[in-house]
Image (cartoon, rainbow, N blue to C red):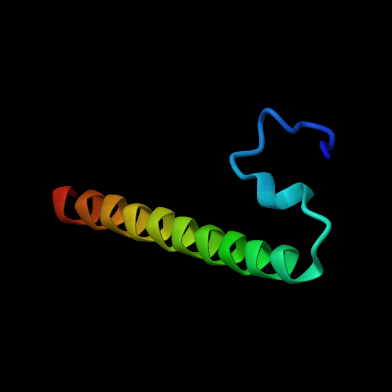
Length: 55
């Protein structure tokens, strides 16, 4: 079973029919997104910090 943008999707879980798998995948996805956001935020903070110390 495939869906739109299947090749772009890194995980086959997205198209599983099992509701439990879908729930697990969603949780993992949310966790990854949160980690990415935290990482970006940390990098942004670091960049602003260096800017402040330079001036």
